[in-house]
Length: 285
Image (cartoon, rainbow, N blue to C red; front, top):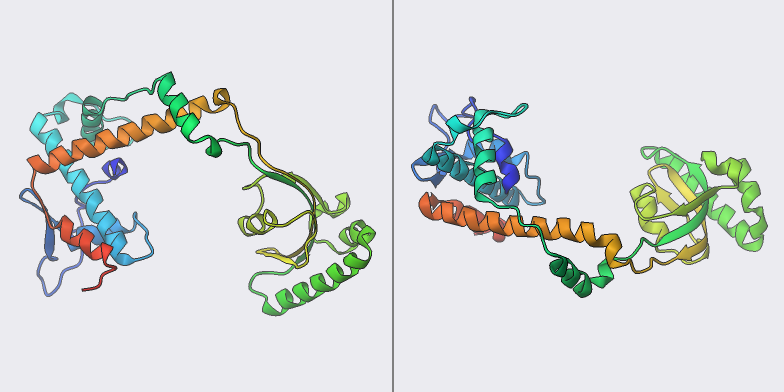
């Protein structure tokens, strides 16, 4: 929610009008109305599968920003802070407010060790696989070319089942990947190093020649997994800094939520619960 502080509550453009009337307002922070036009503009920053969820996220962001703006005004902080970089005066005031009110708490060694002991399964080196491939390229929008590439890949796979030694020759003569000069060798791969759709499929394969072509945006791949190495547990010292950063962020988020709840008690918020209820029910009645 703190990210909401980086955009203004109100734009100079008041949004669309219906028959010359202002857009409806169902959301209020104190005596400040946040219109549907305000929410609609903010929704572009809060993508979601359902428009109701996007609307609720946008409404929450606008409420948070207005709560913080009001508290800056109440405490008279605007006159105390200079802007940094491209900050607006409002953003600078909110930054100062949060720096003053939300204390950064560094987790202790015991905190980090306790988290490590309770979550050891999360701290492993990545799995990795050693892969060779032959790419039969076809543009994503070429339906005929894609069909032909898949058909050719299935034919090559059938031939390789009978004679695996042909892989290097097929790679050199048929592959559209620069790895053809290396017999199709991609080396050791870890999750996230290849095209996502290729990555998702090859890390599910057993050792050996894949029984089917692997599809990606580039075309169809004939894949051979030569080796698989499972990740190994990481020592506490290797992940301590990562754990400390995570715990510090969690504490800061909890304190921010607590602080915002206090501001909601000081500056009455009306209409947000109804918007969130609509999101929870998918917009249904």
